[in-house]
Amino acid sequence: MRVLIFGATSAIAAEVAKIHAERGDQLYLVGRNAEKLAEVASRLGEKVTTKVADLGDLDANATLVEECIAALGGVDAALIAHGDLGDQLASERTFKDAEAILRVNFTSVISLLIPLANHMEATRQGRIGVITSVAGDRGRPRNYTYGAAKGALNVYLQGLRTRLYAAGVSVTTLKLGPVDSPMTHDHGKHLLFGKPVPVARSIVAAMDAGTAEAYVPFFWRAIMPIVKNTPERVFQRLPFLSGR
Image (tube, rainbow, N blue to C red):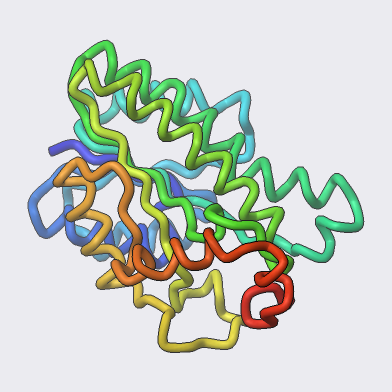
């Protein structure tokens, strides 16, 4: 299988790549940091190609996707794994900071999805997986700019999934809870934090099965309906939900 991973240097994406490498799949990894990308690739064997790219360069992403697919000789599965929590307080002070969060977590993902979807629709095969977040299910003061980007992405993926259904292409929305990784190094950890290795296994399993929406770890599927459906007047009075 030919597998394309964007944001391949994240702890989760690196573990996903390892699973595919152990299966003998052909990998094409894209990341921003050349040193980290080389480090990930060094652990995966010979059937891996890498490319350094800034996924925030929106105008270049269509060409990037085309080059990656050409180098692989086609694509069977693509995972979009990049993202950034950003600084919520900064995003409340200036539009520049808010737009940076929206760009990396929403618009840059769309700039990759459009050429990926068009290719897979034309070839009538393939799997697309996109890492979003449980933060997109309800706005909370601590991360609502990031959550808004992920929520918009969830809606986009719903429409894309239905569009590509007729072509036999699956689109999996991967709604991750917090994960104990470098991205959350300054966050206080608790029992609901996932670990990169089991999270990666769940991601691969969901994409293999063509699951529409997967909460990862699985227990968030039970938690988030409560968070989403709590009346706002109650929500605002519960510090563990509405606090910073």
